[in-house]
Length: 244
Image (cartoon, rainbow, N blue to C red; front, side, top):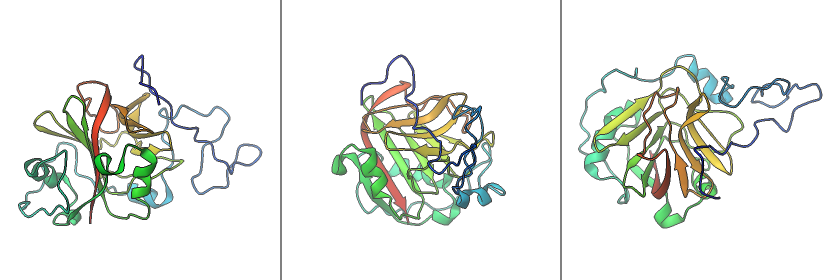
């Protein structure tokens, strides 16, 4: 895929369901919106996947300005060394994870240094995965940033995720951007791109299908700063860790 240009963002594939019936109704489980007058992807809240809808009634998230709970994170276990983050940085991130994953081992399930640069390969690495994941990126300027999700990343016709998701960056100090509650554009991906966070046509974090290029803008979902010094960046390394 070519280099992004002009500040524009390649659109995700059309949301319209292949099971839509005549007249615009839909028989799929995602409750797709009607075609007539259908709004832009980021102009209206789309339904969450069925397993996430119930969680949004009582989202398990820490308020954006609430302090993280303190505990002992000196015994973090990584099954492999990371090419991106060091133990000191991991210890700073750990207090922001849900308490239920504290103390779990970190398993490196995908990394570009070992598995190559491919969004499809990254998706396949999380097939049937039920544990939370941490996506960590280092761009060619050396900036480190990423996202935490309590749900594995996968292809979906609808946005999915919950209020436990957050974006983060080391600038070099750690900054964590948690869910604002303004919308539910947590995460959505297809074979050509992955978007995390959105609103008003901007993505908090965006990756292309080759995992070569990406971008970051302030977005309403997480009220984040741009995670990289460049709003359109080149990926040097990318890792996905399963916390289980």
